[in-house]
Image 1 (cartoon, rainbow, N blue to C red):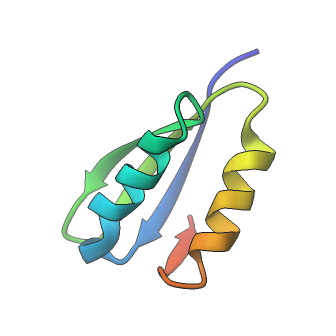
Image 2: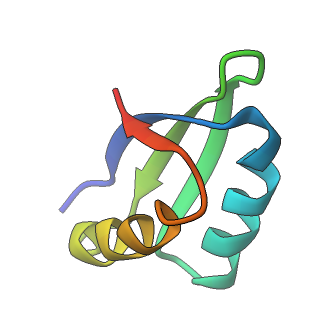
Image 3: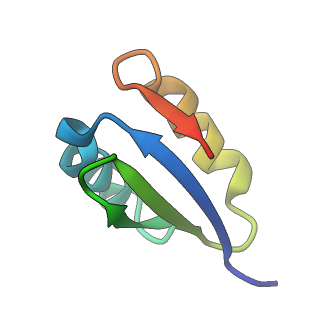
Length: 69
């Protein structure tokens, strides 16, 4: 299985928070900021973890604007 990459646009002031949350979930996904000005980040999602990543994102969407590109 391969790592899956997805792009998202998030509130740029919340990028650090988002990275912190996913760092706390060891091995789930790695977030890389591609465009800090526009809040574009790339999620490198571990094989077999897509469902869990989307579950975490669904919960975070209550407090953070997150849009898949």
